[in-house]
Amino acid sequence: MPREIDLLGIYMPTVTLLFLVTLAIGWGIDRVIAWFGLYTYAWHPILLRVSLFTCFYGVVALYFYQ
Image (cartoon, rainbow, N blue to C red; front, top):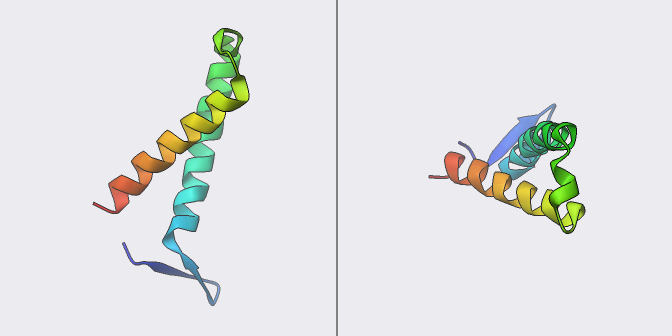
């Protein structure tokens, strides 16, 4: 994957696209967790959301930057 992506004449880093993909994946998984009511078992739901996003971002980044 190239290090920069040309988006309407603006060069953006690839990590920006990875961030947006991870944001969509994280939002979907967040909705599933909320629908099942699993956040009631979390000590700090916001901390759980941030840590899940960090893990997903790491997995997506490692997949593209092998």
